[in-house]
Length: 462
Image 1 (cartoon, rainbow, N blue to C red):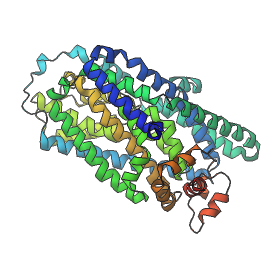
Image 2: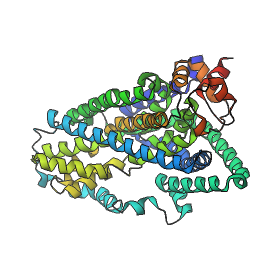
Image 3: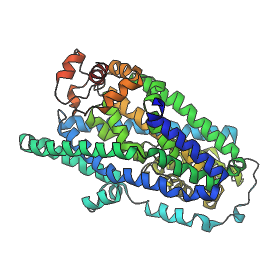
């Protein structure tokens, strides 16, 4: 059957099989955890190298170093505005629906040792911003998979390539070819995505079961509804400003959405997101700067999670918070919500750091949500991923380097045509050339190094 050849169909089958196995054979489902973990490790072993190749070459091809600073400023400004909206939205919904009210849990009855691990991690993560972004060793940053530190080195390397100009041409070409090779390895690994999704979801359902959902059902329901509304309204409006519809965008990234749903981590799809955004017409340099940075500074789903779970614990333990105390909590969250790694468990560490700093809501209350954190993480990771995809489009459009009309044509093309276009070797982009006013699609296609959506669409259609 032709439909079974599509990756998203295979991932759907893997998810369905994992849920069934986890529910009816929970012990066996828990044993499937290595399948999901191995798939994630296979992708993670390439992420830092992909970012290095993409960012360094992309910056070297920018028209000026001033453009690098301009893109960085716009990126951080957008991140701060959108994550602040997410934080406020979570705070408002938690105050209106009060998912923790009525539980009447005595904080003294909670086991503080259950969160010792997260307290230690939160303390270790409380270093200064400079310590967090500047590595002691470049090799160590690559080995640990620290996205922010690798991004800093990649930016500096790209600037050096740009300054060297003609002398760096041979080196830049070698890095480009190395990056293309890495993306082909990613394509091979992605064939294992159905197995990875099966193992991860089987473990989640097998270990935590359906009964956990009933215990804290109102919190889960509130969080899912709030996240969906944020995606539909806030991110939908941002996507429309960038010139594309949210629904066609979600259809285009449906394989990645399903993989994130199964594995509960956005890192498993980072290389694919970078490649597919380039195919839509986003310049490589902008994709390389915005997307990896967003994995630490634009965690919209985690922002909603942090405000809702903080107030849930306060309500469940009858800890009254005044308006000023809630605003203080919001101010702390604007800092602690940054710097996450985009992986399962990072939000719990951020929540621990928040409550420890706020010092009013009992930190031991985190034990109340440990059982459902994995369930909450599904929609949290999806929201993070969609938020970063939309952020990349917004910054590219803000820079005048994104042809929205061509992207809409590409998204509206049949699935088979998109697949043919995506199978073609990517040409290297020149951010300054993308979407310039007055240029025809054919003129842009003739320019060297521009993976323009219209050009790919026309080639595939032929």
